[in-house]
Image 1 (cartoon, rainbow, N blue to C red):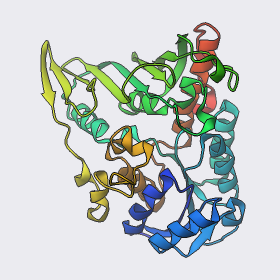
Image 2: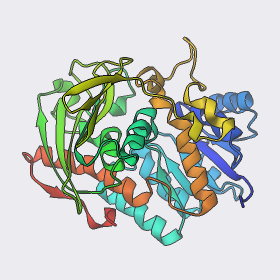
Image 3: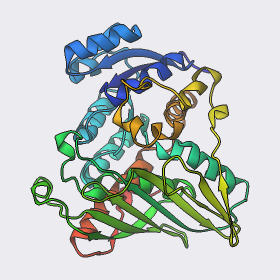
Length: 370
């Protein structure tokens, strides 16, 4: 038996506006409020979507007793503080990636979730993309056999993005490649070792003190014979945008296409076969199924960079919303919950630390492990 719809507030209305109509159409949600510092822009979006509650001050929004949950889509340096404030204000939290920028912040969020009993979900797009859902289906059907190894990459040129991205250590934004390799076997990272390679422009280095053009990390899984390798680049590396993961199994293996919009490959023994990835809208409530292929940022003149690069996050947005709302309604943990989100995020944070120390093995902290 479902409860009354949850009152949702969306924080950050660039990429975040993409989620407004999804919540508006979902039966478990009431798209209650939006928040953005730019009053004119916030009011414009509120009017466009028929939302009366428009805030420019996040702290004021959190004082509103009618808000049940916040969905945070702000710059990455704000995620931890805003998540913690929301939990302390009694609000459930969905937050875009990454969870935080330090291990200490991740720990604080996990502790606040444990203290309050509230729900936290990191909205990692790749693990709800059609490509991931396709491989997950193969795995659960036994088509892959035993998983032997996983590999993922996220390569993206960040020139032209907001200034806080400039010089960011590649692994500090690694959830799009760490997430799928851990999510498929529902595993946790036990320790990491990472190497940095190459060098970015000298003017980009001082902000974060990170010189590397590429960072590549090996992840050892907890209580498992599995390991994975993830690669990340942000600047000064010639490569078309690519969020990808490859899975090598004893029966079949899956390799993400090397070139966007081409078909991926399934290997059966030594026989390769191109495969068209189906859409997974059928897993969703009918009223939001259409959002796997269309959204707010459609058309030549109204496209957000997150949609131009990465083909709309693989149709993941309605799946993320559906998982968050169903978790709230069923009073269960979403995937990924706070601990798993911390495990995924801390892999990247500690991987960069390892790279700065010549590949030193660094264990994941206990608070990220079940």
